[in-house]
Image (tube, rainbow, N blue to C red; front, side):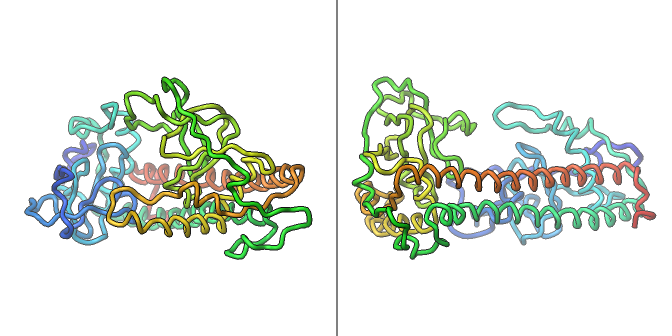
Length: 399
C-alpha cells in the first residue's frame, strides 16, 4: 500500500513517446498520436509502419498525459496507436487505481501549470512530478471516488457539449443572417438570381472594383492578414510566431477601405476590408471601389453562402490546372470579375449594413453569454475533481 501523501512520480511510471522526424512517416501503418490528436479525435494522424518499442504502443484503456504545451490527461479509446514525444504513457503502480489516477492527475494540473518551464514550448520536468503530492486513500476509496467523478463529470461534459454545439450553430447561422438582411432572401444557389427591390442594379464585380497592385519600397508598413472570422487585421493581433521573409519590401500595400482577398482561401470567406494602411502578402488581391458599391457591402455579400459557393465553383473550374501541383488553386481576379453583384442605392447600402451590424451584435452577445456559461461549468468541473480527490466530498453520501 502506498503511503499518503505521495509524489506523483511514485504513483506511476511515466513513459515518454517516441520522437519522430517528418521523413519517418509512411503512407500506412499505425496512427501516430501527438498532443493535438489526443485533445481532438477529429485531427488527422500521420502513419508509421516501421519497428517501434512496445512501451510506446497505445491500446484502449491506456492513460495518456500531455506534459508539454497543453497539460491534459485522457483515457485512450481509439484503438492501437503509437505515442509521439511530449506525451507520457502512464502505468500505475500497485495499489493505485488507474481511473482514480486519471482524476488525480487532472486535479494536479493547476499546480503543474505553475511549475512549467521553457518559453517557446513550456513543459514540466520529471523533477516537478517528484515535488507535487497527492493524498492516496485506500484502493476501495480510490475506486469509489473514480466512479463518482466518472458519473458527475460525464453530466457536466454532456451539458458543455450541448452549449458548444449551440455556439457553433449560432456562428454558422451568421452568413445566412447576412443573406436575409442584405439579399432579402433565404440563402441558396438561387440567391444570385433573386428578385431584388426596385432601384437595385446587377453589376459585374469588375465594373465596381479596380485591382490595385501598389508595392512597398521598404516594407516598413504594418503587416496585415486576412482572418476567416475577423476579416483584415494586423498580423500582430493573431499572435502568429511564424517566420517571414527578412524584408517585406515588395509586399502589396492596402489602404484604408480597400477590399482584400486571400485568393487561396476565398471560398472559406477569407476576405475583408482594410481598417488602415498596411502590407499584405503578394499572393493576396487588393481591390478599390470605383464607386457604386462600398467595400464593406461587397465584403458582406461575398461572405454569404451563395457567393462563397459561386467562388468555390470558379476555383474548381481553374483548379484542374493545379492537379498534381504543390500549389493550391486560387481564385484569379478575372474569375472574380465575372461575378454579378447586387447594387442597392448608396443610402440603402448603409442602412442594410447598420441592420446587419445590429443583428450580428445580438448573435455575438448570445454567443458570449453561452461561452461564459461554458467557462463556469469548466471551473465547476475542476473544483469538483479537486474536492473529490482531496476528500472534501463524501462520495458515498453524494452518490
